[in-house]
Length: 95
Image 1 (cartoon, rainbow, N blue to C red):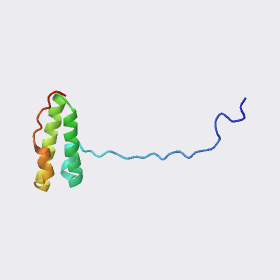
Image 2: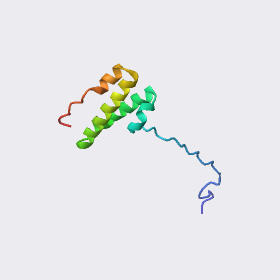
Image 3: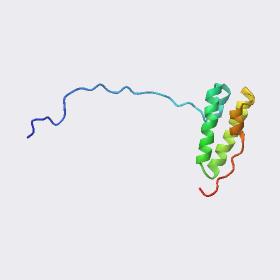
Image 4: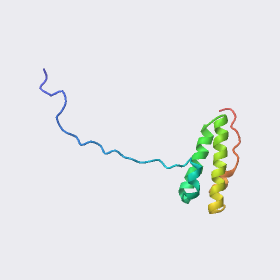
């Protein structure tokens, strides 16, 4: 038998749970009321999801991204960032 106990008897405080609700970036109904920064993040996240998806899912993300860009342009005008994300992405070959 060891002189050390199997487990120490210190009481550690429980970690506080972080309740952070994710923003509704992909919900089109939220886009008209989003601030400019959040809408730009939504467009970039949709572009990332489009690049990662394949098949019909990619087409759905592309359509949603283009709708988000149109909402962005109608609310904030043409911004160079929106021009980058407004272009149709060419399909990648060999990956």
